[in-house]
Image 1 (tube, rainbow, N blue to C red):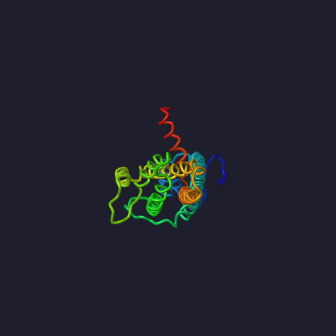
Image 2 (image 1 turned 30 degrees about the vertical axis):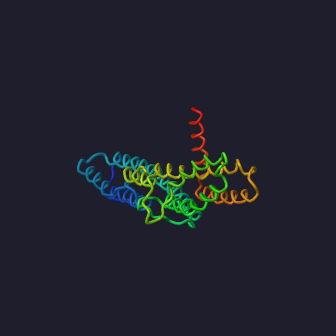
Image 3 (image 1 turned 120 degrees about the horizontal axis):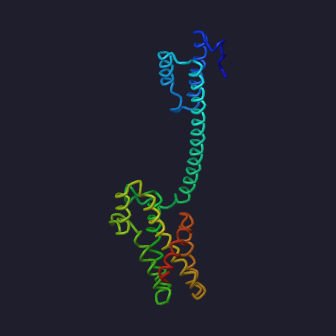
Length: 259
């Protein structure tokens, strides 16, 4: 304990002054360290003034203040530890996001709406650049083969991501924009997830169909189909869409089977 007990539990005015100044000093140091709401000097002074006015037992007052100080110190330390953990988590998340942004930085940023996130804008850029060529290539290779119907289905879905000014947004892009306008920041993550998962399913669905048929293709067509697959795989990898694609395609297969 930082104060000295006097005889008969009585304290002189000087003793009280020294003890109170030590208490104030502890509050000042704690306030400088923790920068939080736990150590209010103003409220301490109000309690000191009340004790003086009431002429309550000084020793009991100091003991209660010390217990209160310790309780606040524990809370402050807990809050500081929590804040540091959050700062570390935020820093790690920023690093991950920066690394992810670097992976997709070479794709065009198609600014189809101010509220659309960068990742969604760039997936639109990637698909918009890629679609005309792969659609023509795949039609040439697969039209007339049994795989074409499924590939054509995925291409039709993929075309919903195509946006090149001055074209208007497709209905799919407009629906995404309507969702984020309706729900704002609260619903943005869910809208982005659905948006990117749809792209993932289309891209991976096409590559799955190509791989299934690859060994049966003539050599020239096999090379061309493999080139298309490599381009689609690169987008899935750069945008980290593999898990979402597999999950979405698995759900689609279950629905087909009526599971």
